Structures are given as C-alpha cells and as structure tokens.
Length: 137
Image 1 (spheres, one colour):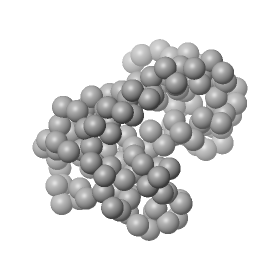
Image 2 (cartoon, one colour):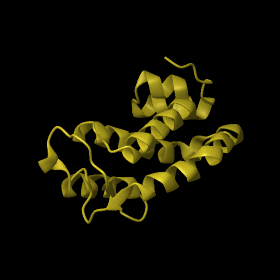
Image 3 (cartoon, helix red, strand yellow):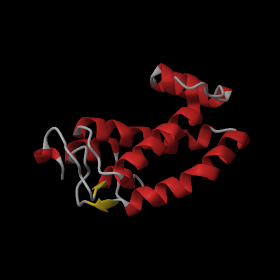
C-alpha cells in the first residue's frame, strides 16, 4: 500500500467527524487523488468493475469536493495541480444521464444536483464487462 502525507488537522478532524475510512483519514487528498486517477484510467479503458464499485468510486470524488473547504493551502495546491485534468478526462470518457446514479431518492435525500455533483450524473461511454448491466442508467 502506498504511503501518503498525513492530512492537515482540519481535514483529519472533518474525516473523523464524518466517519470516513481509515484510508481516507490517514491518506487524505493523496489517497483520494490517487483513487480518482485510478478510476479515470479504468473508465477510459472500459469500466469492468461492478456498478456498486463505480458508485464507491464516485463517492471518492464527492469526498474530494467535500474536503475542499477544509484543505490547507498546500493540500489545495496538490488538488489543483491534478484534479482539473482528471475531471476533464473523466468527462471525455463518460456520458451524462438524466437521473442520479444513486437513485432519485438518494439524490433528494442528500441534495445532489447535476450542476454541482456532476459525477453522480455520468456513466462510462465504453462499458466493459459488468456484473449487472441492468443497473447502469
């Protein structure tokens, strides 16, 4: 497992309060950005994992966004150096869908909107083998 720089105290505190996994709490943005990069590459190559794993991958992107207001200047500089290009690549390898991939109930419950939480409203254009193709929007 890769070693990441410890997150800033504000990020650590927020992760702890939200009950994020130990990997997120200990790895912070380094761990999250590496995960998002892996997801983008996987989507570009033809997503082959299960739909539930895709949902978890999108949750990782949500956490990056959620932590933005808690990031130190150094952490945010790291994010800004990588995230825009990764997001652009993700956009190029996905297509928009009309409904939230987590379902309309969850979208309403959590207030997810296409304009702000766009990762929950996109699916890969080049789906590979998936466990339950009927679950993909």
